[in-house]
Amino acid sequence: MARYRLVISLSCSVFLLMFGVGVTVALLPRRVITLSGSFADVGCLASAFALPFVLLQVPIGRLADRYGFRAFITAGYAFCCLSGLTYCFADNPTSIFVGRILQGIGEAPVWALAPALLSIQYSEGKGKAMGMYNASIHLGLTAGSLLGLLTSDVWKGDEAFWVLTATSMCGGLLVALFMGSPHQETSETARRAEERNIASLMSSRSTWAIMTGITLYGCGYGMLLTVIPMSMINSESSGGISVGLFFVLFYVAVSISQFVGGRLSDKTGRIKTMIFGLITAAVCIALATKLQSVWLQIFLALASFGLGVFCVSSMVFLSECVPISLRGTISGAFYLSWGAGYFVGPMLLGKLTDLGGFNLGMFIFAAFSLVEAVAVAILHRKSLAPAKL
Image (cartoon, rainbow, N blue to C red; front, side, top):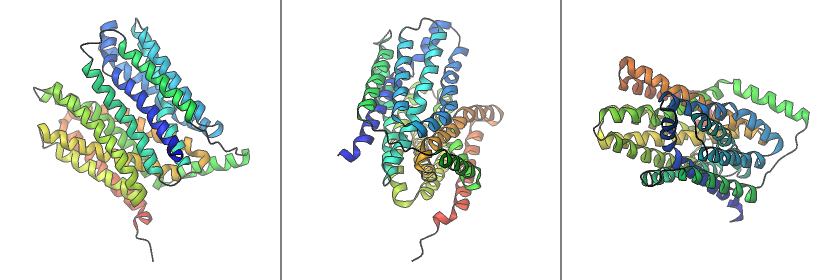
């Protein structure tokens, strides 16, 4: 049991944090509209979170590689706790935006550094460990969102924000008390050599293929959380119910994909698992354009599953491409690429929808996913070749 203490404590911590985030996710837009009366300010909520979350990924990863992981992850929970307190006492839109900035700063190390640490601690079965952690993120969001729905007519004040404050504090205490922080001192000469190696790695075509896939995954993730739900509201009389069901199915599918994808990549290899995830996502999204109602929900959930499988297997693959002293940096690079896709993808899909209809954007995304699968297979064909006896 002691062997699994780290992954269990980190998974429980992030579940608590994301539970609090899930409780507040639907409340923040309503609070901004109440305070400002402007729908334009609602769009700023995403930007206020996104900028620090994306821009801090690589710098925090590099600092964690040098000085250890625990302090930065614990600080992330502290910033999230502070953001919850800011929401509690916010009486104007600016205070809400400050809270979102603090939340973006806090979640950056929580999402990126913990998987990097798990890849160091669990040299065997790292896919399983990292998948368990990623699944806990989405299970927490699922549970929190459900509680938010159940209490939406009961909680009229700041109760949800106090929940976020409390869960962030509890998660941070778990990290501070039960998480070790393996840290290897590296000489300046060795550090410079490693930096040259990672620069060479990031410039190779095979690595660019993976990073492009991660950006594409970010596009799909953002698309499934924004444009697609809005299309459901516009096309179905029961849009609100459909969207609620879709979000639950999305988070559950991604959670399951982390468990399945992590274990599958440990057994069959990272490249094969990535290709499987991309093809699954492409086929299911293409088919979803021809479906309605329940079948539409099912195939979108399967597409979410495929994207999640690609996510965890590509994350593990990148961690294995660099020495232990650069695991934080490469994990930050993963989320930098993901974030770029997450915020550009939905805008592009929205433009394509305006130009040629919703299905056009979906088909283009499916086509890019298939092209990406082929590119990964070609550039990493040695990994797909059967072992010689």
